[in-house]
Length: 185
Image (cartoon, rainbow, N blue to C red; front, side, top):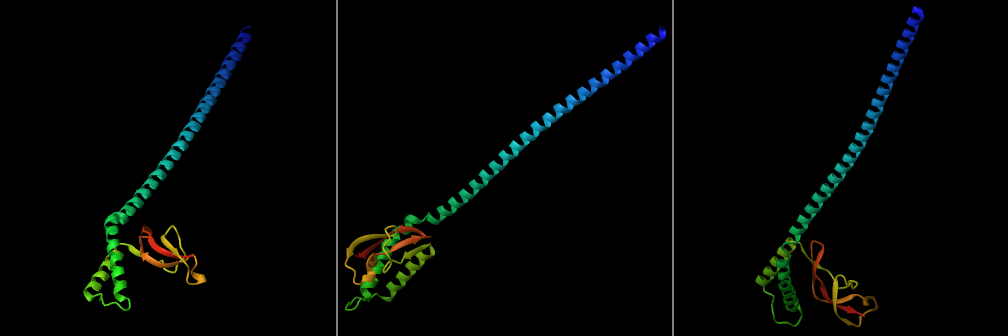
């Protein structure tokens, strides 16, 4: 009987040891599951953080590019009002030169006035003002302002600009003054 009791006790000890091992395994596996869940959660948070960072970085980069472009545009057009004030003077010079160079006119476009004209023209060109070529071109309401229509001298000139009354001007490819023209119909 003592032997049986010892065997039963040994079996109980073995059972207890097995149960303890199983509990340890379960606790280890539950710890591993918890750790795996935590790792997955942290990886998801990391992915979201990376995405937010990339979006914020891209937004900041776009902001830098946009402000740099705005600064360049501002510099290019900062003196627009002043330059536009000189355009009527340039138109007057053009008309005076045209009259002086016409046949049968006694007025002379003096050399000094011609030098001032050339200097004004070169200063405006250096600041980005460019004359719009319009005579002989097809009429474009985006670029030209039609003063009147006259019968076209030839069939080819229909819908084209016959004469330019006032020149149009660009400032760095942007229209600052539309050309006033006569169109053939």
